[in-house]
Image (cartoon, rainbow, N blue to C red):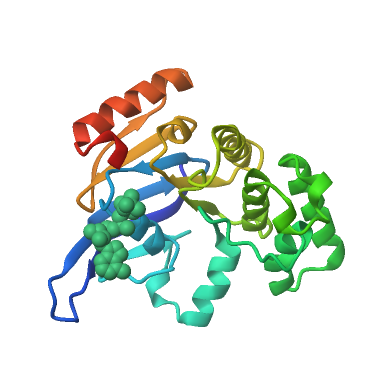
Length: 256
Ligand SMILES: Nc1ncnc2c1ncn2[C@@H]1O[C@H](COP(=O)(O)OP(=O)(O)OP(=O)(O)O)[C@@H](O)[C@H]1O
């Protein structure tokens, strides 16, 4: 049976409503359901509302109306502290800019969320070893982040996002600052996250190549869900299918 991890009901985000200036409806009544083990991408033209939607799903921003449920829990009913704890346990977040602390080593960066959860030291060491092995970064664990490559930084960020075994990993343009080789490595890491750790992954991306690694792509336009496609054949066929759907969406290719 399908297990719902994340669900939204009539999610709306309007910017600028209170200021009296002209307002922008960035997310316009989105109903979305993501089940356990899904690996999906959200794509759409520039300004279509992708990042805003991801911020609402991750509790980083509050909706104007509607609700986000994570494991059946409505996140709008949580106060700031409750939401912070809930996010630390249930959500893993990965950003384009990596957001690592450069005064810490790779190992220390990965440990931060577990330290905040006051996990026993043996458990922390075991988890870091497990994730570093899975993502091929054991040899850089004691390096400072400014001494490692962009691809290694992003694999560190993915490890940090996973240490507390979240229900879902949300990634905003995770390949945006990476060359094509590192982008491939990161998308292969996400495949492992889904297949070996059974963690659900949602990626917001402009990158057709990155999206082609996913099993499903949801296209958004003007803040609403326009269409979605599911991967049936190989990755190259899916990449072509994604390109065709983006062409239908409109917007110039370099805007996507
Ligand atoms: N803080 C804000 N205040 C006012 N308007 C905003 C704000 N953030 C986003 N918007 C507007 O909301 C709409 C959606 O923006 P959003 O950044 O979510 O789109 P996006 O699809 O992620 O774009 P891109 O692909 O260019 O990053 C745009 O019209 C944008 O100008």
